[in-house]
Length: 360
Image 1 (tube, rainbow, N blue to C red):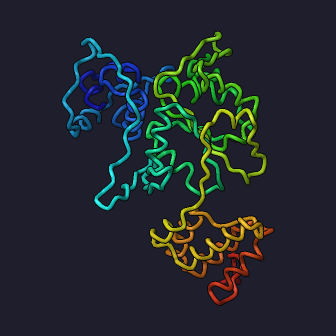
Image 2 (cartoon, rainbow, N blue to C red; image 1 turned 135 degrees about the vertical axis):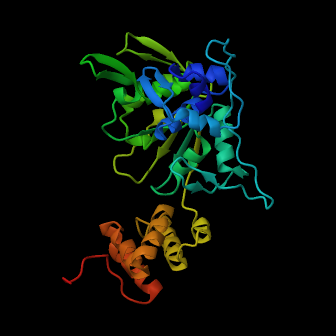
C-alpha cells in the first residue's frame, strides 16, 4: 500500500481505487490504509469516500515492503476479484492451531467449534453468508474471537442510545461551516465488503435494527432516506455478526433479530486456557467453582477469563492477597458474601473486598 502511495506522491486514492490496482479486497485495503495513517506513513484526506495520500514518511515505509511496485495510476486498473476471508493459520506440528494476534496486539487462542478451530469455522460461515450470533456473559471472549477471525472488522458498540444515524450515517458540519453526509459503519461495511460486528446487539432498539435487515436478506440493499434516498448495495464479502450478553439488564433477543442469525453459538470462559496462561491456580479453581454454582442457580456471578487475566495482572503488581480481595470486591453486591465465603475457604484465611486502610 505504501508503495502505491509513494509512487504516486501528491495523488489521492479511494479504497476502491487502491483495491482495483492491487487486486485485493476493499476491506483488506482499507485496514492497511488505516494502519499507515496510525503510523503517520499516510494521511486520510477525505471521508466520503475515504481518500488517502502519501506523507513524508510513506517512501520509507515503501522501502520496507517486499512486494514489487504496482503500476502508476495512469495504468489500466485490473478488475477487482472476489477475495474470500484470509484462511486460518495452519496448525503447528502438534495439531494445535497457532494463536492469532488481534488488532490491539493481544493474542487469541482458538477453541474448538464443530470439529474446527473457531476462527476457521466463522470464516467458513462468512463465505457461505450464514449470519452468526455469539452469546454469553461479558468477558468470555466473544469480541476477541470475532476480531481474530475477521481482520477487516468494523465494530458498532450497541446500547439503548444507538440510532439509525449511528448505523447508516448522518449530516455533519464540515470545516467550512456547511454540512456533508458522512456514511455510518453499516454503509462503509457494505460498500467495502467488510465484516460488521453489532456488539451488544440486543441493547439496540428493534426499530433501529430494522434498518439493518434489508442488508442481511436476499436484497442485500438498504435505502439511505436521509441522503437523497440513495440505494446502497452490499459488495462481496459484506457480512454481519452479532454479540449478545443475556445477563445484561435491558438485553432483549427479539424474534425478528434471532431469525436473522441462523447460527447461534454459546460462548463460555475457557478455564483450561486460563490455567495454560499461568494464572493463579487457586483463582482458576475458585472461578470454576463459582461457574458451577452459577449454572445450578446458587449464585448469579462467576469470574470469566477477562477477570482472571486481570487477577493475574493485579497479583503481579499488588500481590496475591490484594488480587483475591479485588476478586471479592468486583462481585455483584448480591453475590459478594457468597463469593467472599468461597474465596476464604479456598485460601484458608478471611478475605473482604479491597478497600483503603488507615492513614499512613
